[in-house]
Length: 267
Image (cartoon, rainbow, N blue to C red; front, side):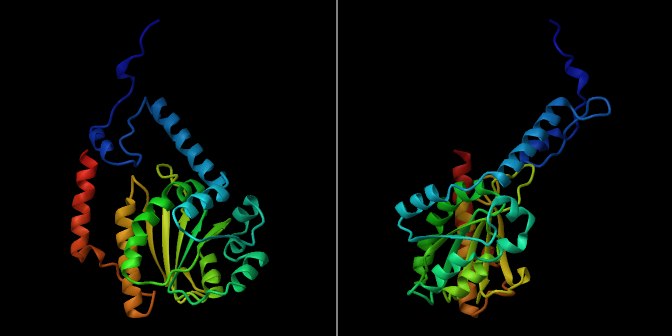
């Protein structure tokens, strides 16, 4: 059997840069089309993105793991009754269902400084894989601030704004929503972090601070935790979660953390 012609694919002259990014660059061509390898890679990436959106979060298993880490976990659900409705009705994903709302209103311990909400969002894979490592990096920093932290809410079929209602029910001063972001063709497992001050129903996305692309191939958990803790401290000092500018890179600890991450990457 004859070997395929090695020269059937015309490589781009800058293909060496493709090793520096997961972005789809320097794909080459076969005649006037993409090479078969790139067509197959695209199909795989598209399938992984679809899986990330449609795969349900195993909240019972994740809750068990989080409880083993020492968290007090409360399971809540949005007003979207299933995944199909969640995808078709974003508004329902922004509100708690009646049972979850009543459960939070019945909580006796209210008035926390910070409420953490972990949600499936549009990538259950991101929540399942990256939330625990992020929390392990974040919690020691929060303890140094002497913050009163509420129960960890684990939310199904949730959008970012669900944390507003949850925070209002528990009278939290700030909320952080950790949520699976909409998958890209090179990032089906990206976690987003949304900080909101004085949460209440009706807050707009313009009133939040966001850290996105939290994953090993994007913003690693140690760096994301540093940035989030910095923003929380800044919001606490300014008594607002709105219009905060992320100057965490000016903190001396940032350079030390970057150096540490660079050393780990070289191993």
